[in-house]
Length: 351
Image (cartoon, rainbow, N blue to C red; front, side, top):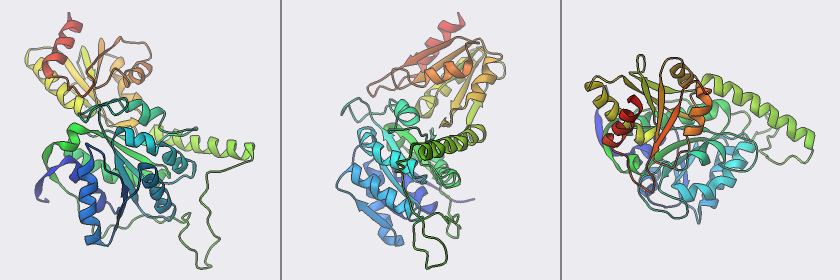
C-alpha cells in the first residue's frame, strides 16, 4: 500500500499525469487552475520533460497537437474561457485522430464570470467543444483521489480510441486538499503508435497527420468511420456510481462537486427513513444512459442537481425516455448547493 499524501487537487492532477507517462505540458495561466501549471513548471525540468508556457491558450493547444502527432503523451489545462479558446485546436486533434488530455477546472461564466466553482461547461464539453462532427471522452471526478485515478484512465482511453479526452473538474475540486494515494508507473510501457509522425528511418512508409480532406466523399467516409468508433466507446465506456438506488423512490443524479453535496443529502434522507438514492455519472461522454434507464424501471422521481442552470438534465430526460418525471435543482454563478437545499427538494417530491 502506497503512502497517502495531502495534496491540492490541481497539484494532484499534475503529478498523476506525470506518473501516467505525460512528460510534455503546454499551458497558459488562468484561475482556478494555475497551480497545475505552476506544479508542472517545477516538476518537468527535474524529469527531463517539457514545460512551456505558451503566448496564449490557442498556441498551447496547438503545441499539444504537435506533440501528440509525434506520438508522445501530452496535455494542457485551463479554466472555462481558456477552454473556449482551445476549442479550435481540440477540433483539429479530433479531426486528426490524435489522443491528448485536456483538463478544465471550471469557473463561473459566461464571459469572464468569476473564479468560484461552476459546472456550466457541461454543454461545451459534451456537445459543442469545437466545430464539426466529433466527440471527446469526458471524465467527471468527485474527489481528489478520483482525479488522480481518472488521469491515467483518460490517457489510456485516449490512446486506445485515438481521440482527445477531458477531465472536467471545477474550482472546488481543484482548490481543495485531500489525502491521495499516487500511483507510480516508473517502468510503465506506453502503447506503440505506428501512426505517429515521429521519423521512420526508412523502416516504414512515412506518416502524415492531417485533418484537411477536400474531397467530400473521402471526408464523409472518414467521419462515418470515426462515428462507428464512437459507437464502440458509447457501448463499452459508460461509467456511473449507483448509490442506494435499489429501493429508492427518489434518485438524485449529480456529478463532480455537486455529487458530494447530493450524497450528504441522500444519507440524511436515509437516516430519516426516506427511500432516496444517488446516481453519479463518472463519464459525461459517453453519458451513462444505461444506469439512468435502470433507475427509470423502478424509481418514482429523478432529481438532477447541478451547479448550473440545467445542462445535464436534458441528457437525463433523454435517457429516462419519459418513463419517470425528471426534475431539476441548480445553483449558479459560483454558488454551491447545500445538503439542506437538496433535502428540501427531495421532500417536495416525496410529498
